[in-house]
Length: 573
Picture 1 (cartoon, rainbow, N blue to C red):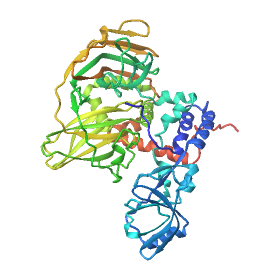
Picture 2: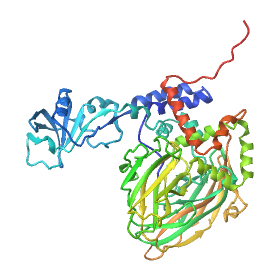
Picture 3: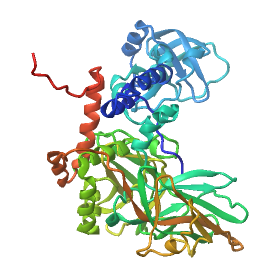
Picture 4: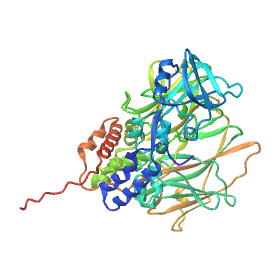
């Protein structure tokens, strides 16, 4: 598990804190604006595209030479600059030289995707033409003459204005929040609305993740199975702390430590229902595309912060999505879809903006939701696409499978889902994952087709559960019932679990099982915005809401001003 983050910048994003503060209070906005300008000067990056071609001709090379481009040739084993380039008949000739330092920075771009380039390096990089000759260089040559037809790829770097202007406007919120303490108010305003779990591994509590995110009233109470990779005991005990967010009220029903004993060489995850699955060698997708047919396959291979941010145009279901293909073993009747993903900072902002529509009536609305029953609230979240919705392609069309629950935007995590493949006769499995525009970051996807190994489980109660005021909460956290441990303000609960001996020849995986819900502090004031709220009765309205907010901020910042509150005009002469 890792803190949620993402590559990419935009001017709009850096101005977002100013916009955010100005809407609520102008106090401090000018200080933040000054700091933001400093950040923009030092950190802002532009984007370029490779314009990759798989075949070239003499005329194209001549035009590029006339434009005084900087030519670089990639052999299988070396890279050189080419000076005095010339086209003679069907051959390309030139003098080989070492690639200069200013042109040695962007030799391995991602074709068909926006690539980042530092502003200071932009002028040099955008003159580059990269040619790929799929052979090793023989000897130490100073001059080459090779057939133009043998060059199987040519990249002509060009500035990408669209990506520079619009790519992931808010994906750097976490970076800006961490840049100065003065922005702490924004962090509070858009942080994960859920209990925060800390693990003590070396005498200090370190943040691990939020739990049961999105359970914002009692009818949304749910259980969360947080995988605890790499934790170490302290004095033969596992030590945890569940901390409240200052603007929330926690109602914690149950907390247990789940110990899973399994064969070595396999890994274990629990799905959102608490069912355990093992996996051995998950395979990456053979193809991953967004609605715009952008190739995302390489981005989703590893946990490396090269996210897909669900920022593509709306699809036929009124959401953003990615389609994945996996090779299916001939005898496979089940597959286990594994992802590493997390909610975005933008999702936290949207949640606050949505709550603000209720004005001072949010508490009343929440009470109505709690009286409406469990199914209504959960179904609304699914229909709006707040969780990650998963579907599989069958001969009869796309079939909805299940969803991945919200993680909160303070940490991403590994998640698993079993998928029935009996109605998929083809040799490949096609999966679709959908959600609200820019609501999630998807970092890695894979599928495992192995049989589940035999595991044994043990649910362990806390040896001690003490609230920050010194009171014991152990009895209230033993089982899922009507008794809750309550946290307000900056309160927390410390939980201790005894370490048990591992079985010989076996491995152990640990999960923190927690159940509960929480209340958030109302974000609005005054009357409710009923016309806007009524829109959310329709499926997919939250995606439209996200796009409206995104485009509105883009337009505002592009216009070069911050909206001001309307002033009353006096009628006195």
